[in-house]
Image 1: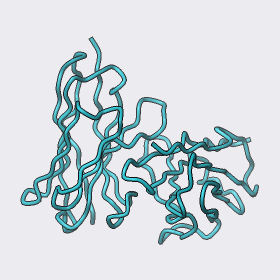
Image 2 (image 1 turned 90 degrees about the horizontal axis):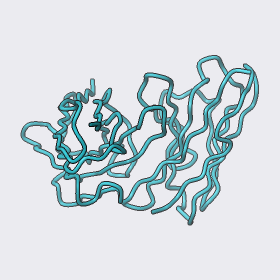
Image 3 (image 1 turned 180 degrees about the vertical axis):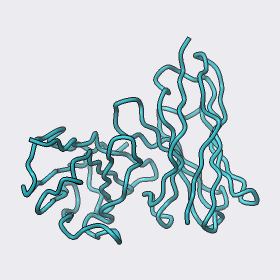
Image 4 (image 1 turned 90 degrees about the vertical axis):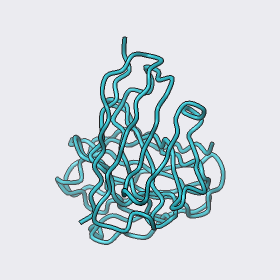
Length: 107
Length: 119
């Protein structure tokens, strides 16, 4: 199965900060990657699909980039509601896999 | 409004079985592939299984192959997961999730049902 490695696994940040989370695939997956946000006690929410397309209703401060094996999720100006855990997920193969998650905490 | 409601979870001993159900509403169930995704307490997300619209294509994570069986009944707008030979490491919250559009990622999730495997 394709492995996804997210980094960092956790970070501390302040409101207004620019954040970048990375996701590296163990083999090339073209642009078959999505990003989710999960808050405690809630279900995951789709943010970005096909590496860089913003899901409808998601604020434009979220953006995604990358192709092949290296991907990034960027939050241009962190808002209080953005403190959460973020997961990447690949769908290049029929066996879907998730990254280990990045927990964004308040500094 | 899209709704996915899981049921059937509970406490089971190692080696035991459970059958999870997911009742779907608010969309044309038979036109969407469906998935099960789980999350161990305090841990990350793990995809478990997927099933195509007419059950032609079915896939499993290596960790559950041979023990779990996914199925669906389009007439009843329902998704199922038969879980046999359960292990402690199968403990977690099991989510039913709708495929975005036969892509392999998920746009709607149920609230999840808890499965605890313990003696």
